[in-house]
Length: 337
Ligand code: ATP
Ligand code: MG
Image 1: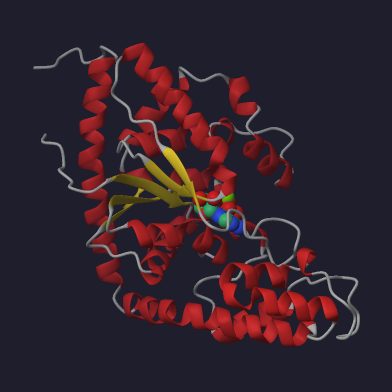
Image 2: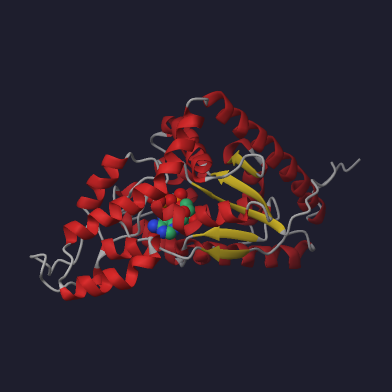
């Protein structure tokens, strides 16, 4: 099969687990870069449904809905299906095949020492882990390398996984020949957006997020409940913006107001209620065009399915080509004629 030609700078692969709706953390950590770079790079976006099962295997029936939710969030955020390839992981079985081959050349201890795996396991209270959960970075390496991506826009928590992918690529290429491409991570301007609880990163699974699809009243309600400086009781008490979640969001979403808000908070000249009102207005302004685009696609679910099927067909063609090269390099192409 002919290589799918591209005149772009290179290829991007990144994606999300369909475990719920996408939130502001996704937007600043990765989505914003994808939208910005989709003209320059041949962009592949994976909806990682198999990876979702590594923690949500008890409820596989939710995937059908969540796969479409993530697709809608991409389209709402400004991903153009004419430019970017959106596809579903489980419908590209070559990724699973590649994962198995990689699992031969990575050790269990390397996986056990991965700091993101450790903190996610602790957060979920796992005393033991499934083979699939421990190994999900290996599956991610297959996601990235089947399409020979050179750039991976991700949040900070993903950096150990990209390092592991690079290590696997080097190991594979030195063992079998130069087939795979070593990718680079591209972390967003806000590498790790804190959740509304002020404790963990904003996350789909922790109920501490503002979703891209939240209506204005929900954004208002969620911002009202965001944790601020606990030492501030009265509006005139001097505040500590460096430990305030609301200030972190002003920093991420409304750069021009940072010096002014910082100063007035420290002096006790702006209260938390007023500060939150300003944040709500900023966020709703950002989200409004996304709500409009989302509503247009929501009204046409058939079109969304067509976009996913066309993207998946394209991803599969690329995957078949890479797997033929992988098998040839590994000398497991017994019947090449
Ligand atoms: P889950 O809780 O189900 O794991 P999640 O919110 O962590 O969901 P993922 O699908 O695991 O989202 O992550 C998808 C991408 O978004 C990754 O590149 C990740 O680094 C990035 N990302 C997720 N949350 C944040 C955040 N709070 N700040 C910056 N980037 C984030
Ligand atoms: Mg996650």
